[in-house]
Length: 307
Ligand SMILES: [Zn+2]
Image (cartoon, rainbow, N blue to C red; front, side, top):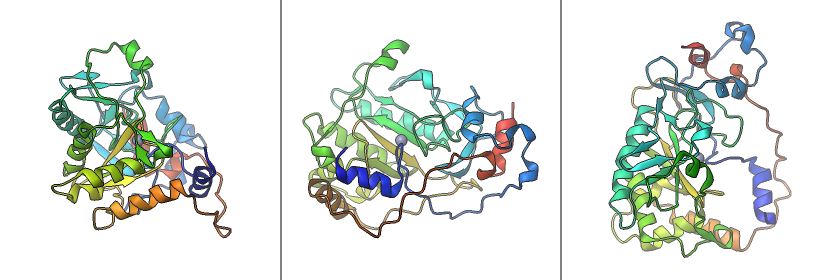
């Protein structure tokens, strides 16, 4: 890791992917400490959510925000579909809100129409009941964040074992300032199809890819607004869906700034190539505390207790 990235990670306290702070725009039911069952008190929420092998027997609903919440009624993405395969099945993170499952069905079909592609390899969505995870992501807690591999999905007959072993392929060079020779027009079209789905709020991908797509897009540019440069994300891109209409208790992130965001992405590239000196007044990164059930919306207790 070079100095610029090390600094950025320290300053922003980032881990996992797509960890930008959500801005609350919906009221989330607060939880008093009294209503937390004794067995859940003081326990890290990731330990409790990590134990559930299946979704809760409730109607589908996300509660809270992308990096602090849970999911009722999660649906399992079929391990293999006509135009996708879920990868790393041992993690049991192929669970999502029905919108996420439907999104994958539709976008993977569009990916399958690209020359050389038969669909998509799907990485992590969420645990069966969402919530914090024992390893990896900060977000992915609502069943609305989806990691999609940038490796061309040409073989949809991979065994379970093969899906543990094969890796995605990096698309970047120069620390993410540019795409490398693995990047193709098909990648552009796949990301575009994902961005054009009306349910998509944001897509996170490395800065060089965003700048490349800004250069290559000659038609409608509106979708580029949703594609945001971010750390990492050169083996996969991360799709974040909006809170479904009418889902009270689900907290949307504020919309991306107006415009195609291409100048901002170019600035990220400049900073990668020529890192700015450290800001002596930057606030010190606070050590991260693991979330407890009391930190999550009150509905998450019922999600954990449900059959
Ligand atoms: Zn992700």
